[in-house]
Amino acid sequence: MSDWTFINNYAVTLSLIAKHPNITAPQLGEAIGLTERTVRKIITDLHIVGYVKKKKVGNGILLIVSTLPCRCRIIRIVMLP
Image (cartoon, rainbow, N blue to C red; front, side):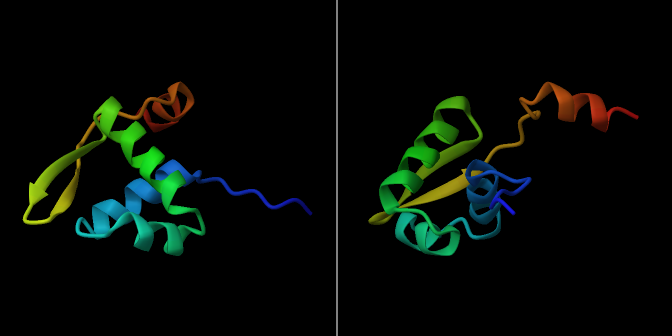
């Protein structure tokens, strides 16, 4: 059996940021099983499209999840009432 999941690394990262806005990239990487570099790229991608906002707090960055519609057409269709 192959190793695959329904939820990709972007969704898992976004979910963890929503639950733990003060989480760091190394902590995210450890929790998800990715390198810090990969996590930083995912955060940057999510920030560029507007799903995550960054706010400077002291020496760190607070990550804030924005409420945007899902970009996946199939999910939008399935979620219609």
